[in-house]
Image 1 (tube, rainbow, N blue to C red):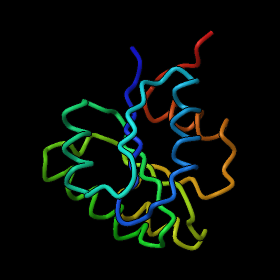
Image 2 (image 1 turned 45 degrees about the vertical axis):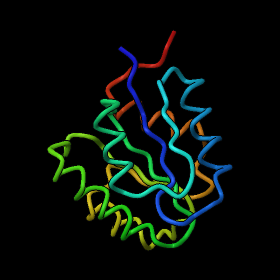
Image 3 (image 1 turned 90 degrees about the vertical axis):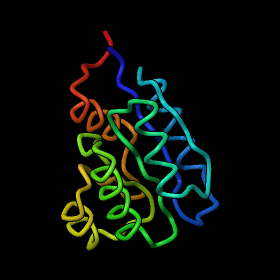
Length: 133
């Protein structure tokens, strides 16, 4: 079974090149990927995640609001009885904020510069999917 991944750009951040690269990389690795586009409301991200029955929500954040947006996303998923959906965060994230994101409920954090093969490996671990032979 192919895991479904939602890649979202919450908040006012309008730059999505990295999110598109991640979405394409995950798709090429065999995942089914839904990309929401830029400037998404947390409520909409959660609604799409639930409707699409995704295993992971990947937040791409460059704006500096990563801790608040991650916290709100995790809380909104729990409130929607979808707390089993893993939340991962990538983008412009200072290493000093990684523990804060993990404490807020992120399953993994991928700061700018994370190798794409590492991203794929970690998403496979989270979703329990093996590499395609």
